Image (cartoon, rainbow, N blue to C red; front, top):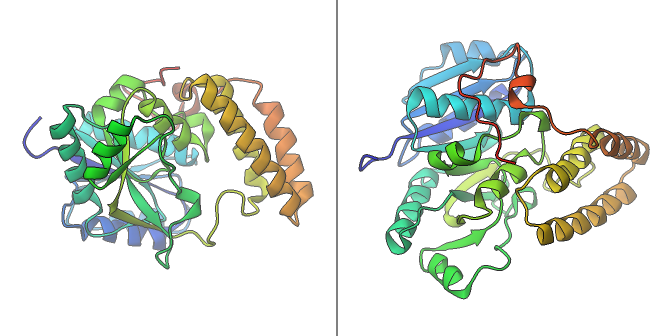
Length: 318
């Protein structure tokens, strides 16, 4: 690696042109900007394609326009592979189109990654930004809990650098080492939305180190302040199906973690359904998700067939 690692940002967008503008402006205004930005347009119909065609930012922008919406999961598979193969990324900085990285977000993440490697001799798998809502409060949808079972030495080392060891993170400003993607594979495209980030980040951090630092901040421009249980409507189907896939079809979590996470999910689903004015919709999503979770996720090549030709299919290490 060179003294200045190559960083490629990957942004996945679908029908949120105005929010995408904010995301790209946030990236471009950073005290450290990436060497390139890969924008994956999931077949938007709101003028996003026209905006991207005319967009001229200060960072090299590589636009990939898909002919079908393959969700955030499929979009990140495409964008991350592009970042590695076409742009020679050492780090891939990923985010949704409702993310607004603050000026020091990338620089601080890189600084913490380098400092941790210098102190321990081990490069962290990824660095996640602190995620806040539009009013500056920590966003409950992106809350990262300290890693259970981390040693006192590991916790102290991270704390000295202004960081915390974590187990997983959402795809809202996460800086991932390219070598981790090569070793553990890409996300799983068949998740479409929700929990693809949980599965991927938990997979790469299971035997490695993952950190979050408050010095790196990103705003998450969701419509409401809440987590995935804030009356998700028909999308509850993906929450149920994908969580069960994580617990039964992936090696991302240790057996004891699967037990704890399953119990927490059952409790959260019960609360979500009980509090919803659309219980019929959520119950339909619950039973459909349970039914469809019985089959394994399709391979990335199958999901993206006819949409995007993967040139180096890095299937997840299961």
